[in-house]
Amino acid sequence: MKIAFSNPSVADTGIVCVAVASGRKLSDSAKTLDKKLKGAISRAVKVGRFEGKKGQSVVIPAPAGSKLDAVHVFGVGAGKELSAGALHDIGGTLYAMTARTGAAKIAISVDKIAGCKLVPADMAAELAFGYRLRSYRFDKYRTKLTDDAKPSVKSATFLVEGAAAARKAFGDLDKVADGVFFTRDLVSEPANILYPETLAKEARTLSKHGVKVEVLGEAQMRKLGMGALLGVAQGSVREPKMVVMQWSGGKGKEAPVAFIGKGVTFDTGGISIKPAGGMEDMKWDMGGAGVVVGLMKALAGRKAKVNAVGLVGLVENMPDGNAQRPGDIVTSMSGQTIEVLNTDAEGRLVLCDVLHYCNKRFKPKTMIDLATLTGAIIICLGHERAGMFSNDDKLSEQLSEAGDAVGEKLWRMPLGDEYDKMINSDVADMKNISGGRGAGSTTAAQFLQRFVGDTPWAHLDIAGVTWSKKDAPTVPKGGTAFGVRLLDRYVRDQWEA
Ligand code: BES
Ligand code: MN
Ligand code: ZN
Image (cartoon, rainbow, N blue to C red):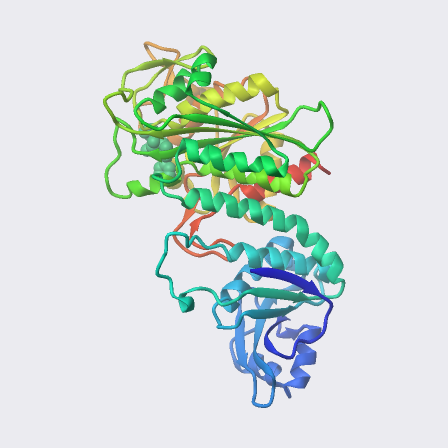
């Protein structure tokens, strides 16, 4: 799909979209078009329940004699509530409205809305971002899709004063959308296609965007002493990998911000095997790694003025004659020993070695990890928010704010000595589960905290938000890429400002 911007002219062919604000306030282009159509728009918004609220819409088939096909009137709500995030949602809803009408070309008029702080050019860029985000599809394995089951829209043109400025503002957002789409592709792939080696190969493609990519294999990780990560991998015929991505858009020697992702390309549970029902979901147990790779693509794509590193630990967790057993004791790269009481609590075993490696090698300013780590976080927060655990109040505030701004919301959860004690082991330095029924997401986070030293760190448990079973304004059902927009925003606000 092509997205374009051009200076205003009221489109008079095809499908045209015009805005109406709360209280049935017609935008300027809605008014102009209304006159041309002899009051058809004002009549339609008056007789229906359409009030101009955000998300509402009404479709008016063009009257006889007009060259238009239809007018889609979309509500934008109150001008003062029209933030960038609200515009993304409106743009996404607009895509859903217009994508399968049969028309290939859609024109969207964008004008000043009273009360909105953004100028029309910026409004158009944000709307276009939402429009594109909603257009994501994963169709590569559908060989029998008929044309009328596919979206008809081929191009969307935003008609706006200052089209050049809008195009420029959209440029960066478009790169973020590229990152989001890359993540969604990775998360959607099944585990017979996407496994450590092939995920690493996908990550390598970032080198053409200026990212330095290194891939470490089993032998190198063995040399480094990554016994925790390797213990998880040993039941699989797929070789584990660790990918280190570096984007150096900031000042020469300045320490980077670091992003770490859990990349379990399939999680059977291992010898502590999971029940059959729903196990297919565990193809997206590499969601954290997917976000880190997509984020690096977004940062490089828009040439972010920051030094950032992204590290992902890639393994497949399988039961096998060579798999690790409950009760095994492994030695992590940090030297700390771990009693593995449940082989299904594998994410923390992978992350602990990657976190330690990252901290030691890069001495980052902050470390943020993302992981589909615990089912318990879904019990706590459902699919609405990701859980955040952090040793740093400032970092958690910054992340919360970034999440609110882009609609990827976080909720901070507690850490503390009383929880930390719960993973002490009788035979090793720690055990990988508490053994009790309570606070499963927190004890997982406590485990990670034992590997981050004093570095400001946040852990985002994204188990509930990585995959969605229903459509949302900017996120079609499936892989969400939750975290890419949030962390892109965090980088922009905290490290590039
Ligand atoms: N990958 C799972 C967590 C998960 C569950 C992600 C559901 C997405 C949806 C993780 O590796 C896991 O199995 N966690 C266990 C931990 C338990 C054994 C302490 C869990 O949450 O049950
Ligand atoms: Mn597991
Ligand atoms: Zn897992």
